[in-house]
Structures are given as structure tokens and as C-alpha cells.
Image 1 (cartoon, helix red, strand yellow):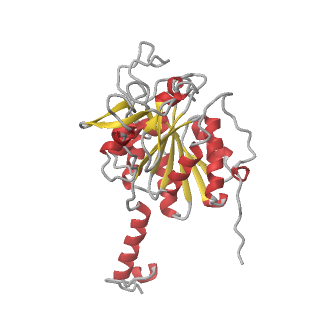
Image 2 (cartoon, one colour; image 1 turned 120 degrees about the vertical axis):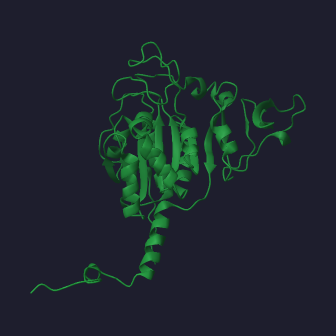
Image 3 (tube, helix red, strand yellow; image 1 turned 135 degrees about the vertical axis):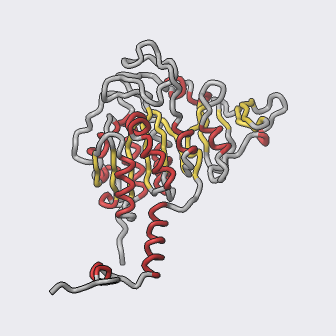
Amino acid sequence: MTTQTIYQAKDYKSSQLVRWCPGCGDYGVLTALHRAMADLGVPPHRIAVISGIGCSSRLPYYMNTYGFHTIHGRAAAIATGVKAANPDLSVWVVTGDGDGLAIGGNHFIHAVRRNIDINVLLFNNKIYGLTKGQYSPTSDRGFISKSSPFGTIEDPFRPAELTIGARGCFFARTLDIDLKNSPEIFKAAAQHKGTSVVEIMVNCVIFNDGIYGGISSKESRPDKTVFLRQGEKMIFGKDNNKGIVQDGFGLKVVTIGEDGYTKDDVLVHDAATLDPTLHLKLALMDGVEFPVALGVIRDVAAPTYEEEMEKQIEQVKAKNPIRSLHEFLMSGDIWEVK
């Protein structure tokens, strides 16, 4: 008989004192991750958490798992090597909008394109927090910061657009304060085979406080967000009477029961659809005319890099009679020196 170990969130917590600013959204993400890992039941010694540089990148210290606090922007590249070398590990990348999408932008898009089986948690606070308040690649046009005192004059990256544009197969979004749904989203990311990207809307209480207040507050969230669940209608609102419908080639918000619209008109979410067109439209809803989409937006099956690599190695080995370095060195034209 074998006994299955039941893990609890505390089993994934390290003994290190958690050091973030009081009120930082990172605390909520860490708590949700501990809970998700306990539910997944992967032993701590089978997990590796890789980070770059930034406030979010301190997270590996607070995990009772293997961890690697690497250099600026290189977490995705190093995580790719870790997964390729040891495919049995559950590999997580913890990065910020600056670390992951600025200096680490190329590593990010190529990890997504290769579909290596890693889970990327992208903490997006739209600011450089660790280096004290410069604008980041996701800061909105016109954003005033220490490095843009008159407002930025450039448009930001939108993580969903970048992920799907790089042929990403999994994209999800959550709020730092949503301890109810975040563990489920993290679990879905871990269970997806391939690169999963979870954008986490994180509040920087020091340098960008309230950046998501318009959608994250208890009062505004029901009308300003829609939580997408596979196979369920895209219904939201304080009275659950609003829905997303198809409008030509676009989308439209309607009130159920008004202007002839019924519940039957509301779209049903299908994250597994190969065509990313609707997924991208949903992911780019901005919280103004449309609600911000939360939950698993895209989850499509595709071959993973490490599986294809192992398959190719076996195919080459099957065709090659050489089985050792000695055999290789002694093959072809050789001679002895006497």
C-alpha cells in the first residue's frame, strides 16, 4: 500500500520574514499561490520558482521549494533551461511588468512562442516599484511618474495582446485581492501543458496606489469586471443582468430584458477555441465601455517544447547506432599515434 501525502498551504511557506511594503498587493498573490500549490498536491521538492529583479521577484525566498532569484529580465530564459533539463519539475516564473516586458521582453515572447511548460505569474502594477516610481512598459499614455514628469508620450504593452500575439495558448487574469478565485486560476495555469501566463493586477501602495481602484473595489467590481468560466454565459453586474453579446465583428454590453435582448443572446465562454480572435477581444476590454475580463480567457492544447525535444532525441537515437562518447570518438577516420 502507498500513502498519499496531503499538503497544506503552510507546507509551501518558507521560514523567511516576508518583506514587502505594508499593504502591497504581493502579499495576496503569495497567499493565493500557497493555497493553489496545496490543492495541486505537488511535493515542494518537485517545484522550482524562478524570478528576475523587482519587488515581485523576492517571492522565491518565501517559498519552501527550490528557487532561483536570477538577474534582471532573465527569469523566463533560465526557467526554460530548468524545464528542459528536468521536465518533471513544476516550474514557475515570477516577474513584474518592468522585469518581464522591458528588459525581459524578448525572453518572455520566445518562451510563450516555444510553449515550454512553465507558469508565468506577471505582477502588473504599471510602475517600477523597486527602483522608486519610474513608468513601465504597461503604464498608460499620459502617466505622470518620476521619469515622465509631464506624462508619458507612448502607448503601453497590453500583456494579453503580447501573449496572444506570440502564439500563446494560455492567458488568464486576476486581481491581487481576489483570494477566492486566484488559487483556482493558478491551478488552471499549472494544469495547462505549455506556457501559461497569468496577469495579476497588483496595487503598488507606495508609487501607484489605487491604479486599479476603479475596478477592484467592492462597490465597482460587479459592474466593472466579468469573470469568465468555461461553458458559462458572460453575465455580470450587481444584479447579474448585464451580458456580453456579439455585435457584428465586435462585442457589445447589453442589459438582459431590455431592447429585445434575452439571456440566450449572451455569449458562452469557450477558452479552448483555437482561433484567438474572440479571446483577444475579451482580454482587451478596458473597464470603461466594457468590463475587464477576469479568469481563464484562453486555454488551448498544443505540443510543448520539452515534449517535442525529448521526442526528437529519441528519434535521432533510434537512427544512430552510436551509444557512447567513446563510440563517437572512435567512429569515422581514425588513426593511432605510436
